[in-house]
Length: 305
Image 1 (cartoon, rainbow, N blue to C red):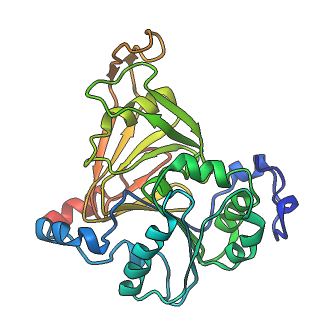
Image 2: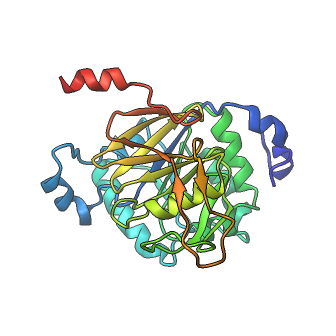
């Protein structure tokens, strides 16, 4: 899919897929669990959680209010409605340089230079499969990877489906059932910006721990990242992440699974999994996404004193 980046457009950097996999990206990814402090949901968050800070997550998108943000609305079946919602929120946040692009395979070339010029590219929510279908095989994907690896000050961000589409492996289709059932979940290929994680969103609100556990049991080289609403992970250098927001991020680690019948039972049969490790992160928690280990435990404990 990626090959030599420069064949897709006026890329400044040339590298192969093999080289790309060994590079540590210099820039940042921001993955958000959904409902990121927009006007319609702020009251309930503010009333219930003293850790709430207005626009805390959205303020991470750019360093300066006039930096260019391009919002990719391809995940949404109603892009105009999505645009109106974010336009009001970004205006209240103080952002003054925001554009909206409904990318598809047919028009990707038209918007190439706008992505080149952007300081932040933000994927909104909707359907992660729609994003991947419309963008993955276009020149935009290698351009994003090129900028992510090399460009000073660049950020890629996504909320809800816009966060779920970023890893190499994504949840394409799944049932939110009381039990994990064999063959009730399908994995597919995402944009490839995160290599060793599978991301799920609206995690606590929609009770998705079962389907994320199922996903990482099927793909055991990946951690599972479950992002609550108004919660984000800010990822730097590809592996180091800090939790931000008023909610919780859950990290599921399958590396020590001892027993499971996943893959060995008939379709529709319940699946059991033994010995998944779970970490629960709140604002300020730092985690290494290669090892799955928290990196600032002592600091967090001292702050509680």
